[in-house]
Length: 111
Image (cartoon, rainbow, N blue to C red):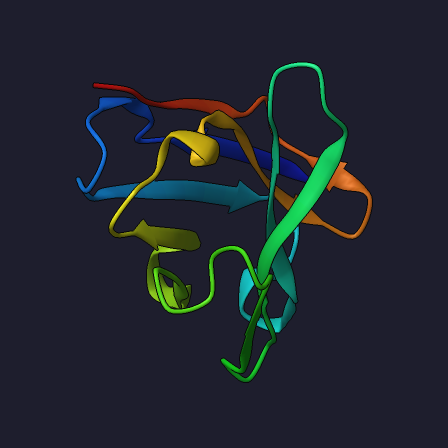
């Protein structure tokens, strides 16, 4: 079955950078379109960005220019590079394939 395991979250200060990873298994990783989503405390699930099988990317307006989605098909790994982090980026971050998501990794941005 499809499994996704996120890692790389932590507590950082505003302006810092962080890179999240998501290792996928149980499917043909190189053929999958994948996404990052996040859920802030008390809020609903928010789409962050996606990458297609061919490597094309798309981003939510709130993160455009600061976040980058990439993939390493040889390692079955999806990445989310987050630069210039803001307090409003604080959330539990998930990677997702179709309707399946992992357990999430917490990102907290605070001074």
